[in-house]
Image (cartoon, rainbow, N blue to C red; front, side, top):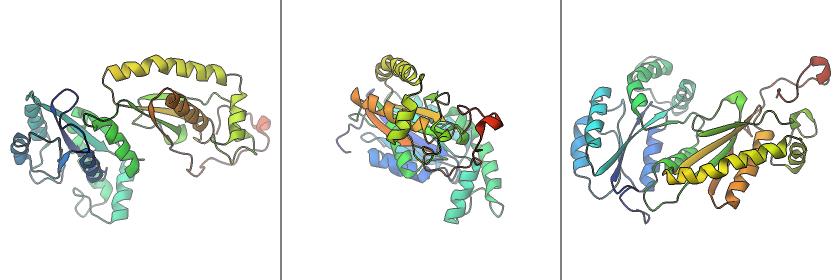
Length: 314
């Protein structure tokens, strides 16, 4: 149990039911929660759910039930979860794992395994059928985790924040940069757009560098709007974070975005992470799109001739 209490913060025994789209990382989630101290039971038949929970009194439980289960039925699962939630000694939560169809297809292609609902048809056909089947569970879930861009480390970090056991750390803050070109991180609680700042991309000497390099940092801090923006950002967050703690929130994701996810968002993310650490918070920092290959077209030599606004492009 790694020194943690079997009971949750409210004194009830935690029970997590994990379900979701095939190929979205269900097995990985089960292993991560098991590492946190949960007893893991995967691919459980629905008829055994109530007996299993009734026999569990001294250890948090994570149960994997999805479309692979022989007697799987969406409405039956929802009804059984509702029955469990009537017990005063249990804290029951439903976790739904999801991912984009193309990511699921890629994962099945890489592992060369058949999709459980595709039979002899293409993987995407199975994904479409399963999404309709699983939608009621997604709608009813306490937590929905989109794993499209997740590594195993990302999954472990998010699950630890959402489902840590009593005796674990308080509020964990994860700050990530991202490119709007590739979409806003779905797990983000707070999103800030820094595309209004002067863009180092337009300086060909700075373009190969990132927001972690000093020349880029110097360039951005010279922007007349930078100091006021960063000050306002920290003044906004400073009173919010203690309130999140008082409300029992254990995990907060802050996402900072610019167009390419390489310069401005990276610099602001790094600065904000350091600011949070200085105030005693446990902080994780990542840069989702920093190493992504640039998809944009080559920048024209003469921006003035093209009418391009350097703050809005690239």
